[in-house]
Image 1 (spheres, helix red, strand yellow):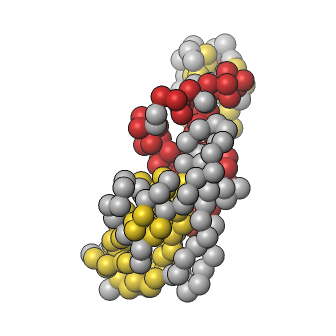
Image 2 (tube, rainbow, N blue to C red; image 1 turned 120 degrees about the vertical axis):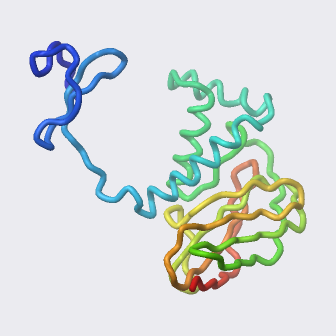
Length: 208
């Protein structure tokens, strides 16, 4: 990014030029940069990261004040907000296929939840995934993965969503829109101290 004083004979030029350069402003300062187009904004990696980031952002307001306060030191070191420190570390850990944590650092070894039998029901261009929770223990969330082959390996880039564990209520996730075909699902639980359970048994669901 290059800062400029009067781009295109103007103090407020914006937009792209010849599909090569972009003129805009950042914090009130005009700049010009190369035009970059993502190769595939719906790649597995991008979908997996966005799914985890969405879930983490939804959890922040529900965190206890004592847990929120633990992110202040990391935030101060990076000159960012505690929320951004929490999101940043959580997403960074997920790229390494490690679960995020409620506090920084997590200092309590928690007990993973006990999960019931995973089920999937097809609908119109959709599949409803239901994960019963037998014992909540210290469960925080359920990471939901989708594959196109039986016995697929769960990875950070085939995550499609995360459901929050609330006592022993079922975690329900609707996967849509889907083309007709056969899909496979698996789940792994997440505890508040960043434990990611082993994957369970795949289920197969067919969308007509």
